Amino acid sequence: QVQLVQSGAEVKKPGSSVKVSCKASGGTFRNYAFGWVRQAPGQGLEWVGGIIPILHIPNYAQKFRGRVTFTADESTSTAYMELRSLTSDDTAVYYCAKDISGSLPTYFVFWGQGTLITVSS
Amino acid sequence: EIVLTQSPGTLSLSPGERATLSCRASQSVSGRYLAWYQQKPGQAPRLLIYGASTRATGIPDRFSGSGSGTDFTLTISRLEPEDFAVYSCQQYYSSITFGQGTRLEIK
Image 1 (cartoon, each protein chain N blue to C red):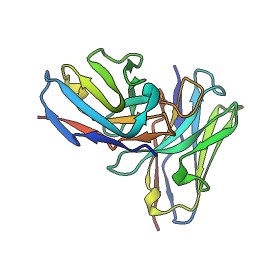
Image 2 (image 1 turned 90 degrees about the vertical axis):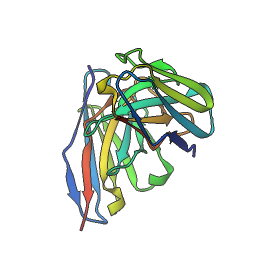
Image 3 (image 1 turned 180 degrees about the horizontal axis):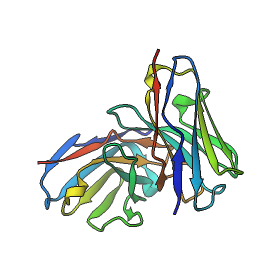
């Protein structure tokens, strides 16, 4: 059974960066897509972007292009999302998710528990 | 960008009733590349339906999806107490976008 375990909640200052990790266990790591979806308080889900580890080619939502980086470390089965130049609008729960098709865009079968990122001065 | 609009925003029903949730796309979602998720407070989304009508593993058959083009529907045939949650649609035909969600609450 696939499990995704994300890093813990963080509080960041405006203008800073945050890096969230997502460690996968069970299943194959490198062949499937990892996506990142965020949810601001009381709001709907929003696509941030993702990566397929075997291809090392990221896929970005246009809104975040230039401000986010996705990486994957196959040796530790961990995917990462780094978001820069944070503002209060970036306050949200960030979810990592994994597909079973190996392509992007896709739907997501497995989800992490979410990581709350709070941006506040 | 394909915008997904879900209706209604909130649906109030009783256990045992039938729920019909709508997801309308601003342009055609070819190939029926549409998924539905259920989300309960404090939890991650749970995949219910992909390909517009294929149930994900372990999803009860009271959940069904239909539609094509720009109009899609999630139907829950007989509501169980555990079905009251927020439901979101997602298209994956052109990048990825989500609808704003429909809250299904107990009447």
